[in-house]
Image (cartoon, rainbow, N blue to C red; front, side, top):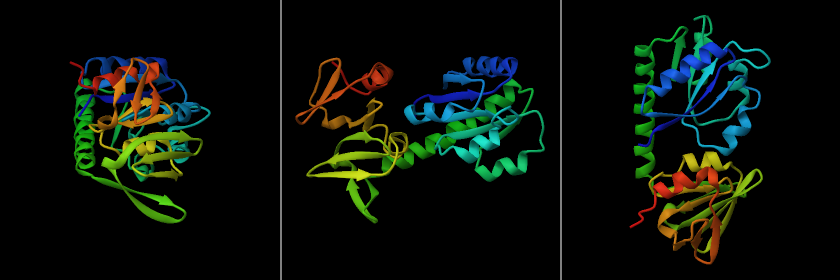
Length: 231
């Protein structure tokens, strides 16, 4: 799989910088952003693919536990705390690890290995998937992944444009992208996901799929171009 895309949520500057330094020592992890509060992280998660969240528990305004209760996210979560007293409550949220400060490099590496294994297994499972089921008018309808051309955001819904059909599904772009094989689909824009083998033309700023031009934003340009075989 590709590198692990991570964010840090830690109010203590010293601890936050320590975790950033640990991440910088590991090639398999890319730090997308560091936050000193959990309050505004949900919006970032809605618009970015995140694999791993390193989350402090004891923070003012919104604690790590309150963040987990409020936020729906498919990312793996590692909880960080100064005390072990929250361990039982934390594992109710299916966190994959629980690290007590100060975090040693050896302990951090064990966490990275665990996260990488879980994400690799998840990606292998997705790559074997040939179809998805979506809820349309209270019914579950099957869509073959090979028939999907592109997906477009529509507020709290997405439009899935497939061969001969257009589906309106109540879900987020991040959630549906996390269910698709990364080898077959790419995020071109905050509002668009495209199937790679449906791309007919690329002009630097957009993909052409059938008669539709899909914009490519600066945020997703590098990742999108990495997946295209350019001779």
